[in-house]
Length: 160
Image 1 (cartoon, rainbow, N blue to C red):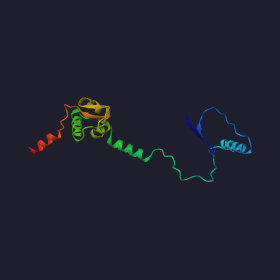
Image 2 (tube, rainbow, N blue to C red):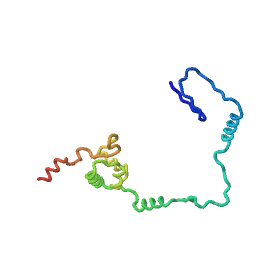
Image 3 (cartoon, helix red, strand yellow):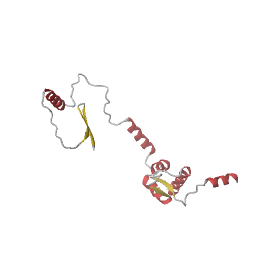
Image 4 (cartoon, one colour):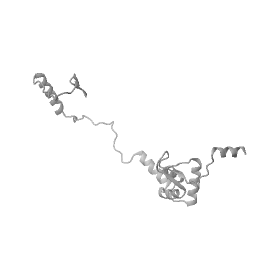
């Protein structure tokens, strides 16, 4: 097995045949090097400084940020999500699935404005959850609720 070793600009290459222990020659150069290494290791990595005047360019702490306030106002104006009638929710879901075949639960919540638990309950009834594959973590309608038309059927409908 070939090995390459580089230390302080000196490089060795070759194959290890016997074990060897190397010790440095203790002379002035070696002692200077060790002294510099020791000084570098004992020097603190961070230093504290006393400032003459306060730094005014730093952001001051804020109790409540603007985006939190906006979010709270939006929540208050929308109010709590209230369960609509089951048939109304089903109609909203079916109209959404006419536009796209797959939806994640967050998008369905935005469309229907219904609580997540209630929406999942309705979706378990009319849809299937894809837990793996290309459409992971999405819902699609069960085959008995789908009324997608294939491309051939659409052409027949248009020509008729």
